[in-house]
Image (cartoon, rainbow, N blue to C red; front, side, top):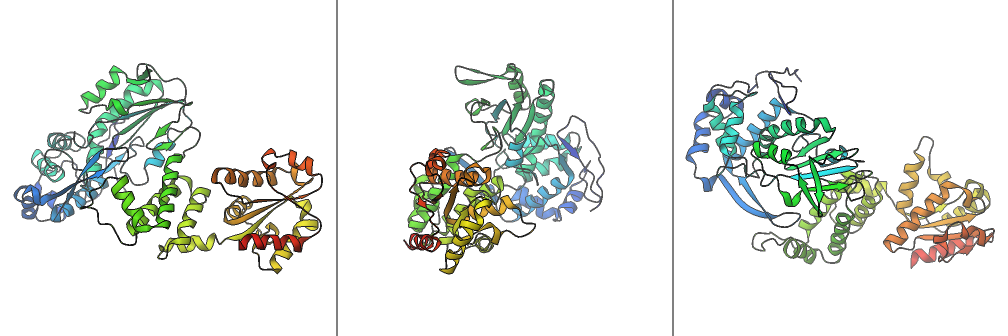
Amino acid sequence: MPLLTPVAYRPEAALKLLNPPSRSIHKLDSLDLLCNLLGVKKGQLLYICYKRADELKYNSFEIPKKRGGLRKIDSPQKGLRVVQQKLAELLTENLEFKPCVQGFIKGRGILQNAILHKKSNWVLNVDIKDFFGSINFGRVRAVFIAKPFEIHPDVATVIAQICCFNNYLPQGAATSPVVSNIVASILDNRTIKHVRSHRLIYSRYADDITLSAKRNFPREIAHISDGRTIIGEDLANIFSRASFEVNEKKSRLQSKYDRQEVTGLITNKKVNIPAEYKNKVRTAIYHWIQDPKEAERKCFIDILKLNPDEVELTEDGRKLKHNIYGRLSFIAMVKGKDDPTYVKLILKMAEHDKTPPKFLKSIKEEYKMYDVFLCHASEDKAAIVEPLYEALTKIGVHAFYDSKEIAWGDSLIETINKALIKSQYVIAVMTDNSVVKAWPQKEINAVLNGDISGGTKRLLPLIHGNKEKILNNNFLMSDKLYVVWQDNPDEIAQKIKALLAS
């Protein structure tokens, strides 16, 4: 890859113009050069921009927003779509945005944006009203004429014509994300300069702006009055001078004692997904398993309020299935593929999906289920765990026993956590040895928490020693029916087999 050298870069700017060899747009001064860079004929480009009827350029429709209301999508048609894709690639190749710009840039996104603001004392969310709609033809043309681009006005006019529809940036066009970032860089520059002395962290993801403070939040930037967030006059003026308007209804100043959210993710101590999001995915999976077709209709028609005449529902519920996999991928992106919630939900889909995607096959193999997990202290291996494991294996019960399953060099924590998730039951060997060991107690508490929150009954206490003393070490175990170890591994193994059969 050839080295790129800066052409025009102001230290305070939120974007840098690069000079890719043979692909530079700096001081572009003729339409012929633009057409060469885009790989289209001039006559074809002018026809698409000026001769083709507007109704043939775009297909417009509405989709529901996550938090209510409808979002208009203008999808470019035929040749215009190809030209916009090529222009978007050209602009992206010529630009580098500062880390404060988190939207529509490879390697950045809502997760990276949220990470910037985690563990803050205060988080301010500011939403720009009608972000794409407020960026009109004149603003797009002007930004390409001005520094650092310095493109000839006639060429800038054609670029604006490619990018705009009905005098705004259409949501659905490939050029709209990068062009909106270029136009909004003026706002980024001015806001960063304004808050620099307060040591605030600033970022923008499309129309979502976040300012966070590790200490006190400056009242002149924003404050809370009668439960409402009030944006400071100077900050509001910065938006206004950059030709953007603050959406006051969506502005929120959140302390560390509130649930702090940045682009839909919780950022108080660590970046996390809201519980309601995971619950909705869990519910969608449940209904899809029960009746895929009806679950799909309910999701898209009843919940999302889409027009039945415009939604192509399927007979087997695969439209909802793909939607579920998309949401599960989001959970995995934020929490990691070893996250217990993700693993449980993806395995539930694997259990019921007759035509699973390819990636699911490897996950099923990796998380091949155990019948039972043997939780114990190392001191109890010889007397209890070894005989029990042999008795279980002899009658075909697949048990996880660390001495047999963990190889030299394996990650102890990762292997054990996966095995806990993969096991139908967990036998907690509770003795005078185990109650004073941190590791068995962590395993027991993890399963207990899952039983309490999920309504399951996976934990099976097996007690040997002073029962009262052992149970008093964990009050959550007090209502659990337990079995006493009496050197009877074969009897206990049969009890496990009966449980699995039921």
